[in-house]
Image (cartoon, rainbow, N blue to C red):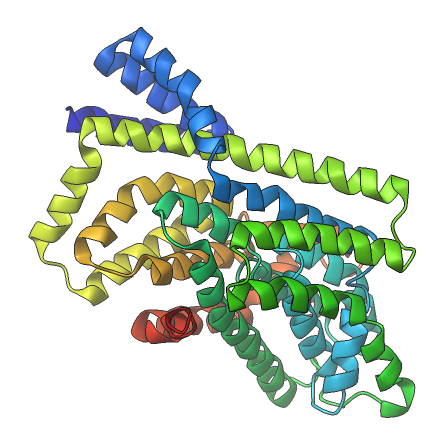
Length: 433
């Protein structure tokens, strides 16, 4: 073992990432070079050739393309298109109804999507123009959707949570269930931000409720029956134990296709587009996962993981100090890296520490996903902000959107504090399973 080699590998990895080398390439190149240095070229080639098969063959990962296909089919066929109208119908009488409706519509879209970027893009196209026409400041309208999109990775199905469950060797279903509470708490905190803004800054968010005469409540709610049916089938079976998270993905994919065919929304072109996007997204995720698996093996060979875990245990850090370090690490990484890269770079080092400290890995997974999603709206590389910029370029600049997400970032930090202070909020629902 050579801890020094492991430290050098970590430093080289972050240098490559700072130079904008693709995460997958950096995660593969560093362990390959490090293992070559330690053991020679033949063992390095052996690990490089064996790791893809051993990683991709994990049964749990088959849920990734299934949930992605469910989301893409539902999106392209318009099954989720009525969520915003339904949310408006239910919430129309409260101040800031449009903004709050868009946030809860994001939560509903997340339940059939699992992607922050897709959630932000879909809701941004629908909600931002209507919010601006109703008198909302463009920056606040765009910022609320960018923030609402982050709920996409917290409400199951979450692709981030699936990959985390594989690496942490913990129940994906329990991580899913634990994420529901924090996802809903995030949506509620964003709604409170909107209400406070309506009260303190009516020039930014008009407090006037929506005109009930303009909304056909019954029709709006009936229009979302396909997505409600899909959610009931998938999550009812998942949380009742009828099928696993992997099987839920298959049921969801088939369900979205059957419902889309039954409602005559699925064409050959839309199905082909959904399949192509599923294959492309799955491939990019799996290649990053292969690199992270190699990096984990490299750190194990150098002994760095055990050394860091022993050092933390020897330092006798309190729970509060340890959590502060973890939160700061992920908030900083989130400013510069996309979520999958940030998670897979850090898990090989952090998981042994949390196992040694006896901290529940289901709770930690939900916390990590929440912290990574904050990075989606944090400058300078807040991906959700740039997605909103692309779909609403005529309304707000990147700087204006980042300005608009500031109050929602404050709400996120409060949610993180609550999550750290009260782990039972996350673990209550999984404990009932």
